[in-house]
Image (tube, rainbow, N blue to C red; front, side, top):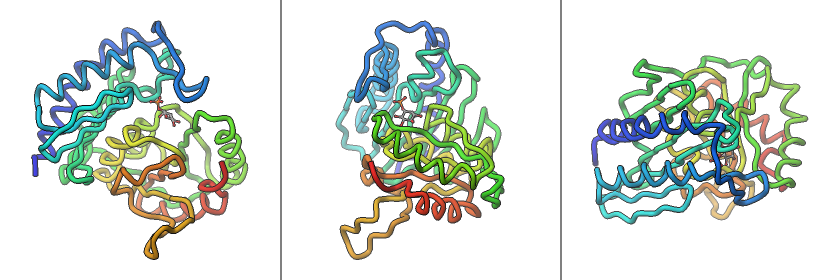
Amino acid sequence: MPDPQVLRDLALEIAREVAPELRARAGRTSGIRTKSSHTDLVSATDSWSEERIVTRLNEARPYDEIVSEEGMRVSGTSGVRWLVDPIDGTTNFVYGHPGFSISIGAEVGNEPIAGVVVDPLLDEAFAAARGAGATRNGRPIRVSLQTDLSRALVATGFGYHPDRRRRQAEGLVEILPRVGDIRRMGGAALDLAYVACGRVDAFFERGLATWDVAAGRVLVAEAGGAVVNLSLPRPRHEDDRLVRPLEDLHDLDDDTVVVAAGPGFIGQLTELLIQAGAHEGA
Ligand code: IPD
């Protein structure tokens, strides 16, 4: 097993190299296209960032597998798989709005072992390695101790398809009166980093991709929190449960609801989400 701290430090070094250019280009970017829907943006800088990160990872660790959001793939034989989101929160990036980040996660045999989320605008680097804790700019962080759902600050996000968004808004009609407040910041990787440092009490979102959560789930786990997979109630095997630990990112599909929170709180939140039907419908 490679040393998780070595992988974390490599990811941090690379993300920090890329960050100044993203800060300089934020809000001034050209070459904006759309992907899965007219609201799903991608800029030329997403591709630039991806190229830099994937090239640097591949130079440093030529036998590792790399999967990146905008399509770059490197096959590997070492057992280490990197999951890269070169700009998570591209809409924020395009508008020069805070809330975008570089997210780099590493796993071995589906086990998450290192994760780094770097916010170029606020100059914050969140980093974690299995067994070594989580930090923000080098200082240890912990999830919040919140146990009262009615006071909790809960972050969420919305998908890119109108039907999914309508369904998510309907779920919020049930959820919003039952929690302290809701935040929609626009970048799932930072949402998870914020759970890890207690800036929000919890996060949930349906339909995230592997690269959105690969780094953040290590941050939350190492900061003392839990990340679970609230999947559709359609058991494929007898032992399938509705709420499962988010261990295997291959389990993520368009219907998966990723939920992250402190340990004293995640049960109440998943119950509320199930009552609100956050895992059902479009
Ligand atoms: C998106 C952001 C957003 C979330 C979307 C993601 P992208 O990632 O994380 O907050 O709501 O579901 O796809 O497309 O900006 O890399």
